[in-house]
Image (cartoon, rainbow, N blue to C red; front, side, top):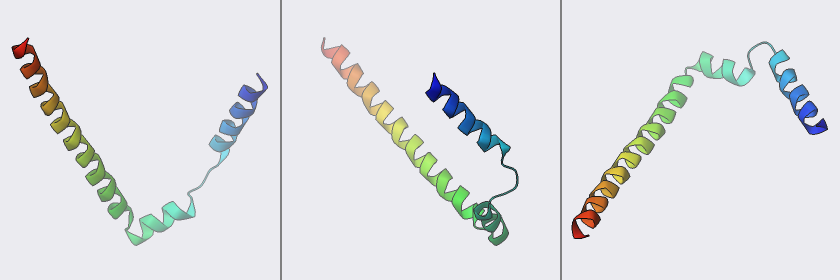
Length: 69
């Protein structure tokens, strides 16, 4: 019970912060935020492509195993 209260107080303190962090401000001012967003998008697209190819391979293997049985 006390752990829950402590964690709740920590999260409430996070919501009390206002203003923009210096890291975010520097990324926006220098234009590097677009590089960060592009890198994140490339990583996510790569993961999605990988998952779709694995899914296709699994479907082919499932078809082969049901045909043999």
